[in-house]
Image 1 (cartoon, rainbow, N blue to C red):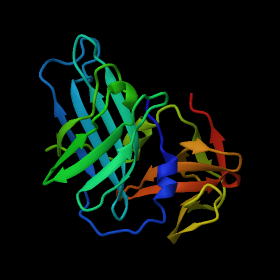
Image 2 (cartoon, rainbow, N blue to C red):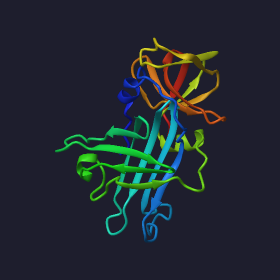
Image 3 (cartoon, helix red, strand yellow):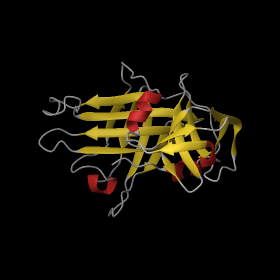
Image 4 (tube, rainbow, N blue to C red):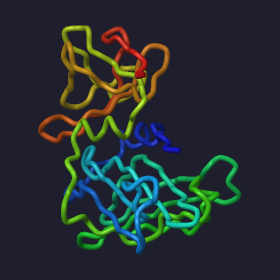
Amino acid sequence: MKRIFLSAIVMFICLPIFAQVNYSGSYGYKLPGDSHPKDKTAIPGGTLVLIKMDGSKYRFWLDVLNGPPGWNRGETDGTITFANDTASFDNTFEDATNPCILKFKITNNTITINSESTSFNCGFGNGVNADGDYPRLEVQPLLNNKWLKKEYQGLPTAVITAGKAEVFQDENCMISFTKKQYFVKGDSLISVTENKNTFYTEFISPAGKFIYGWIKKSAVKITQTE
């Protein structure tokens, strides 16, 4: 099951930002063998997607599938911040006996992941681990808002009903971004998570900009997706 690490997003808001190359894109590898007999889209291997947030901070999605006989899967997502060419992410699963720290290292156009832990500690399917080399794919999928909605399939939809709604850095909607960001009336957003008065959303603009943050519920109408 995918997990959203919003605490990591909040934690990194005030960290210093260092200029870096934009590593946004899709990376991955395929294992020998055919696709799943009942799902031709399920191909053994690993896929890693990075989308730049700010500076050296990235949103990532990781999906690993092993082959027969188990066809087990491991999925996770979160936020990482690169220092030069390395980053780490705490993917320790509930009830784990040991920590699961995913370590990311970029070399040219390949990202290497090392975890040094078991599938149980990482919350993955039996025998699945994220370790390996993930070369940048020669053919890049279009990472737009349609793609993002598929990642969050089944979550509530929030439609802006006010003239405009500001996006804030914090869940109390007290801290604006340096350059204020807004959605306008009629915009349809994903409610990734919410509390009593606010909700967190992520959005990819037509120009490819990744917009994320908290919005006041008073500015929207939230409906549960069927």
